Amino acid sequence: MKNFASSLFPPSLKRFFQLQQETHRENTPDRQAAPAPVLVSGTPAAGPVVLASPHSGHFYPEAFVRIARQPLDILRSGEDSFVEELAQGAHSLGPPLLQATFPRVFCDVNRAAWDLDSRMFHGAIPSFVAPSDRGLAGLGSIPRIVADRRPIYRQRLPFMEAALRIRHYWMPYHAALADLLEAAHAQHGFCLLLDLHSMPDAPQAGSPDFVLGDRYGTSCTQRLTNLAEQTLQGLGFKTARNHPYAGGYITRHYGRPTNNMHALQIEMRRGLYMDETTRTTHEGFAPLSDALSILVEQVLAHFPSQKNTTHFSG
Image (tube, rainbow, N blue to C red; front, side, top):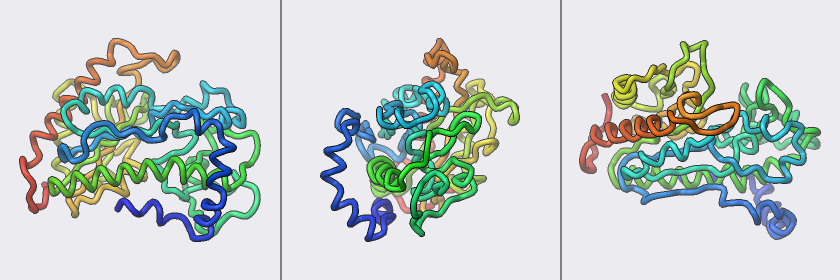
């Protein structure tokens, strides 16, 4: 699985990257000052669970902010602020934690690499670009819109800008995630990705505290989804399943229950732990972090204690 990211680039684009690599490094000071695009904490394969926070990154490259039409507070509206911090307690129980340091408005790793809206770019669009309905709506791997459908950019971008973001941000994230899941699966015979997100209030779904997304039972065995649901409800939280968030590209791509590889997207209501206006945490942060720890503790307790080849289903 881990080699699939590099296979996304046609030979012509790979050759271009080889020729432009040094120039790109010299002419992009933001990348020199930026943190690593992906951070991995903990020991791979320490257990069958992998924690990931793909949308909590908050390093906004200066060059990106300069070409954006919207102010920073609007650009940050889709940010899953503090999710990687909420996961620290659960991470301390053993599961490795993967996080992106860049924001989803800059590059969204929860979309397929070439799920792009061609209207964003000037010049010829390569034939391998394959937008989904969401991509055509402006919510692809390089988003066109943010917050109430506001356009992000002042003008169209060169397509190579998108290709470079895919190479330098999207690919490292998915390579790291695939490595972690493969290591856990190889060591334990099964693995579970808990893909952590935050969400605004969702009155259309009854304003749940958590939304568990398993792609309608196709990315995670019902046994594990039920366990997560029962654990959270037992802690007093209101939960929903697959509505309004069933899981995105990550859940769909990595969730393969027939291969004992499971992926469950977990959306947490932001009001539980932060003030969305000031973007600061409040007294609900610690209880929610504790709830995530209890959830992971329960999941670890229900996995078989040692590697075997029995299909983990139910």
